[in-house]
Image 1: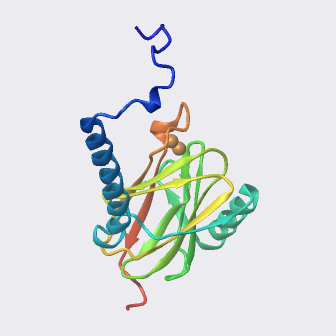
Image 2: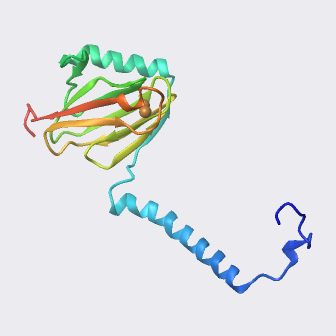
Length: 184
Ligand code: CUA
């Protein structure tokens, strides 16, 4: 029984069973397979996105999002009162995660490439863009940048994929993709 001390105190000098060696080898090799699959999937599966990350003070990031929102606001989203922002095609665009919303609603043009910045004002959130298989952790203090080129028009929902408290399940946002106004 486990509550008794082992009979052989120097247990690691015991001869090891062949079967045990085999399982350790299998587990080790499988660990390597998983590790390299993770890297390979970046290229073949187009799933693990390449991104950049910078240190940023949450207040400084909030200020950047506010500046962009003020400059390029084109309206408000339904009855939510959340600003809809149409930044210049191909520019740097900023999205803020905070308890409990994604702010603002970004309106992007199809076929244009943007640098999408993500950060949090408070806690850890998860940026999950539907229906694509994108999931990025969003931390306060870090600014993530991913390059995005929308390929179809429509409304795409953002949900929060890290549990962030009582309002977690209500934390959704939106990215709207419209036809390009300036042509290609
Ligand atoms: Cu934000 Cu869950």
